[in-house]
Length: 195
Image (cartoon, rainbow, N blue to C red; front, top):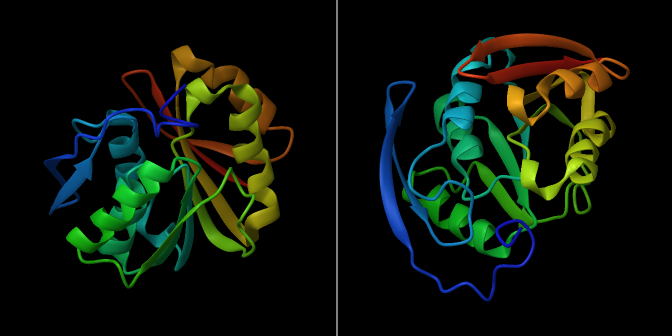
């Protein structure tokens, strides 16, 4: 749980890795106490590859941004403005470093927030690779409170694994949203939720 809530006690050991996505090379700083610090995780990669470019939107919110790959890549690829939030202060610091390193610091706003606590705007697009280990209550807060921060005709995009309860999450989401499976690969589901 350390990487999600309080990681100040973990020794810092910043490192970098490079990755290619959608024809562009990126370099990211990572550190102890952040999710998937050695490479761009498959779920985030699949999410980014699955969102139709025509649906990306110009105002995006990345909830649980970690060190920033999803929001930074969306900003770089599409020129969208992305607000990025995470409860992890170390992750937020890294995300700011990564925005600068990848040349999108003028397109992103990155801040500390527990879910939507410090979010005041509405967006055409909300994206999340939710922190499964933070527990169902946190995940459901991210997924269901998204409606309060989506513009009319806005969409929520998320990735979730089959073995982390994708089917039951989909069933619950369908009570509030129209849910579409955009991609299914290696046990990962990419969902689009609209209302």
